[in-house]
Length: 191
Image 1 (cartoon, rainbow, N blue to C red):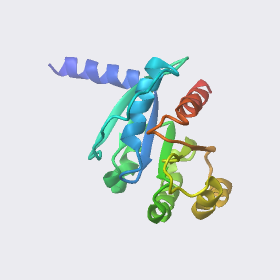
Image 2: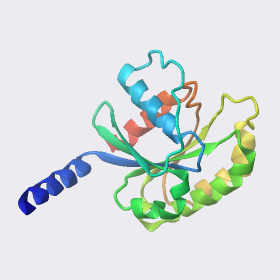
Image 3: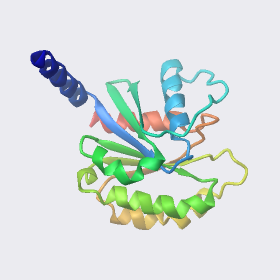
Image 4: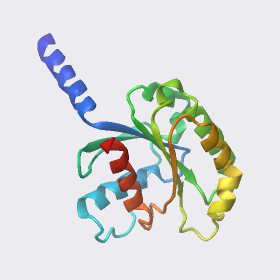
């Protein structure tokens, strides 16, 4: 029985090293679960019709999704926003981070900035590639990208970070920006 557990444990570790691990982080309600569902569907159907946005519930734990890209698989682990205090326990084995911000929730932007700074300063993530997604760009009450980047102090964050940082606009609901997210994942896994 112990030998079969060891065999399974070894297979799991081998599988995790063959796949790239990406963490999907952000405050509660920013759209992480919807992004995961949309990326899965978009990846399966290409640029086809995404249909109506599926219902989601706040994640209280983690969700794992395997995305098959052109050259390899990427395992995306979504961590619930309420798990912020224990996010660092997941940093060790990840090669990239997607950090989502709700650009329609101006009250949440400052706290998201503080969360991002703590993620970027974590030792295990000093060389991880980082994608910052400004989500909900389809909402009528969003700030302009220039305004949100200024409020978020993006220029200062990028200048002081050790990681390569990319920023994109997104609407997980409408599908705007999904192709760019998949392209980013493909570009960082090819390295």
